[in-house]
Length: 408
Image (cartoon, rainbow, N blue to C red; front, side, top):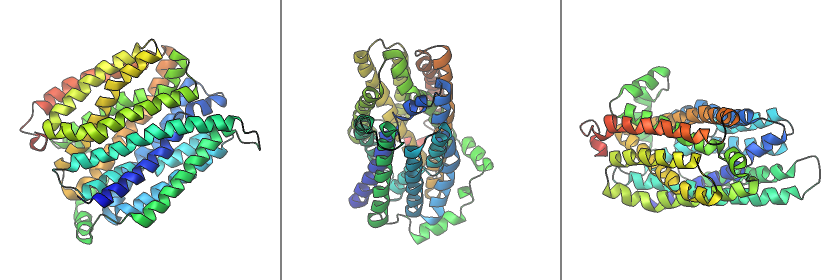
């Protein structure tokens, strides 16, 4: 395992997530300024994921053929342009366009995971992927807080026609993405050898199609893992995508307060994926960790739905962040072991696409539930999903050690 390249990809993912998380808590409030309802805000959040659903598997397959580095460069360019459009948006449709463009080219996390897989072996892969998760978490520590500070500064700027409360964070995110582009170009070498690239091109499964998608779900190891990924992400994305609106509606929190709470979540995720996951994966079987994560998330989402105060919310976020951090890392690690090395980029792209699919459904569903039933409804819906999933994991993964030899 190359420590230098791991450090470089860690820095790249961190900077990428810093830009993303910087504007994440601001987008719903931005849309509200254009008179958008909770349902429309949900659709706006979903537009990013809908575009990523199309782009992520394609970028994953392309990275298998032409290499990880050029795909990372393309995706970061799209992110920078998307942030610039967001900063200059003066109509609601421009918000949709900016998020759609960023989503379409924003498959760089799955490509970064494939890069890690290229330079690690099965023994230390979970730890390497956990490092990506730690970068993700650290990005969420600094990003929302920085976004909150920049929006406060922007509120006091009254030059030009821009709404600087949102334009300043968005343009700062674009600048961060540009720095990231330069870093990839200068410091990150390609991880695929010529021989490996040639082997991948010969493998029929690297061509993305609905047929291969169906075949992936039919494979005894891959199918249950992808199903777990989909349903867990569906529940978790309900929590993530409607959180700013939930915080406003249930607890009366404004953009700055919400941003700092998301920073707190980032601290929790970084601790789980940067420190705890390596120890857990060395001590416990992956199928055990998957089962426990779904059960803990069920309890956490019920508690989130019924949270009466900010203090209680801070406590409730601990098991939610723990279970989300563990499962996201462990399922991807198990997937990379369940396929040939030639399929890793594609299967991680497919996993990212499924997660993006949940981010199409979840914000829309969450926004409708908030509009119709109230702030408690998204949490209960998420808990129903993960409660069923716990039973599914027990039957299809935990008790099937014969089918999951790589996770036992």
